[in-house]
Length: 87
Image (cartoon, rainbow, N blue to C red):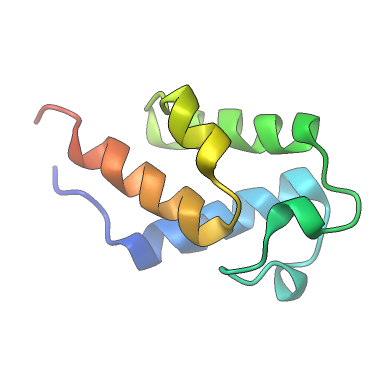
């Protein structure tokens, strides 16, 4: 199975983020710092990460998770994790 493109991952991540964070996709551009979005707290972000991990059947490295601040960062980390999964 091939690794999905970062753009495809970003679409899925954005859908999950809007559902978990409760902010419209229009307000969550790929380069918006999630820490500056009203109503976004660490619990919501961790729930979002857990849902992303389930969606892709991966476990993200804690160091990577704590280094993410934008949806583009999240998509890149997911892409990296998927590329490391043995075929």
